[in-house]
Length: 81
Length: 377
Image (tube, rainbow over all chains, first blue to last red; front, side, top):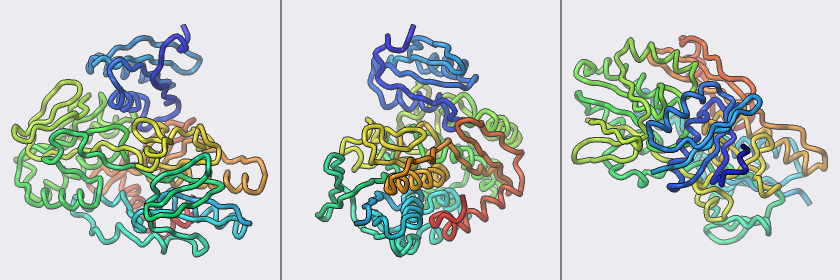
C-alpha cells in the first residue's frame, strides 16, 4: 500500500531530526489539526516503532498503518477526538 | 543597481544573515533589516533570570549596534508580503521592494490558547521570567509542576534544564524539604533525545525530581489548582510553570505564506519557501521539525546568505543546510552536557561536567560580540 491511498492532511518528514523528534512533531500536528485529519510521519528512528504507537494508544487516536520503507517507516495517524 | 535584499526580523538568524550578505556582496547588494522593536533579545538568558542567576539588563541590545553600518535598519512592523509583486508593506505606511526576502520572523507566544493560563507562570518572555522570579522568591513550599502546553516550542531542552536548576534553587533557599518538583513530559521519557534522556534520568532519580510521562497540557483550572492533559489525566499544583503554545508571525499568516500554525513551508536543505524561490526562511519561522533555537538559526543563516549571494552573482548555489544544531543542557550543580547533531548524525551527549557548564557560560557572555557578526561558525 502506498501513502497515495490515504487522504493526508499533512506529511511530516522527520527523518534525521533528532530534536524535537518524530513523536513531538506528530503531537504538534495532532494538536493543531481537526478531528478526522490524517497525518503521515516519516521516521528513521528505531524508537519511533514503540514510542509513536504507545502515545497514540494513550491519547486515544488511531494508528491507521505503519509502512516499512528502506531505512525508515511511514506512520499514518488519524486524529480521533 | 545593487540587488535588494530585505530581511524581516532582527533576531539571531536575521541579524547574522543580513551581516553575512552585506559582507559577502558589498556594494552589489542593498541589505535592509525590518524589526518591530529595534531591540535584540538574548532569549537563552530568560532561564537564568527566572532562577535569579542573572540580571535582565544583559539580555537586550540595540539592534543597530549589532548590524554592519552598510546594513539599513527599519524599525517598523512588516504587515503583509506580496510575493507576486515582491514587496513588503510596513505598518507606518510605505512598501519595501525586494529581489530576495529572508523571513527570520521567529515565533509568537499564544498563551490565550490555554484555558486558565493566567494562573500559571513561564520563562518564555522577559516579563514572564521576571514574574516567575518573584513567584519563586515568595515560594515557601508545595508542589511545583512544569508542563508543555504546545508543540513546537523554543529550546526543547529548556523544561528539563528548568526542573534540574529549580530543584537546586529550592535547596539553596532551604525550602526543598517541603517541596516537590515534577516534570510533566509530553513524551514517554524526560527528554526527546533518547541518549540525553538516559543521561538525565539518573539525575532525576538521585535528586528526587518527579517525572510524569505522556502529559501534554491542555487546560488549567485555577480554582481547583489542577492541570489536565490532552491524554485525559489531571495533576494538582501549587506553582504551575508552563511552556506556552507558540505560533508563527502575524505577517506570515496574514500574507498566506504559512501553514495553519503560521510556520513557513521550507525546504529542509535549501531553506527556500516551497512555493516561492526568492523567499527564504530561517530559525523558528520554518515548519521544519527541527529544534526551534538560536543555534538552529545561527547555523542556517550562513546557508541562506551564501545561496542568496550565489543567485545575485548568477552562479549555482552550493551551500545546503545539513540539519546542524548544537546546544547545551544545564543539569544543575554547575554541570552541563552538550548536544551536537545533524540530519545524518544523531547526538551522543557526553557525561555532564563543569567543562560544558563553563562553555555555556562563556558562550552566553560572548554572544553579543561573536554570533551576530559571524565570528563563530
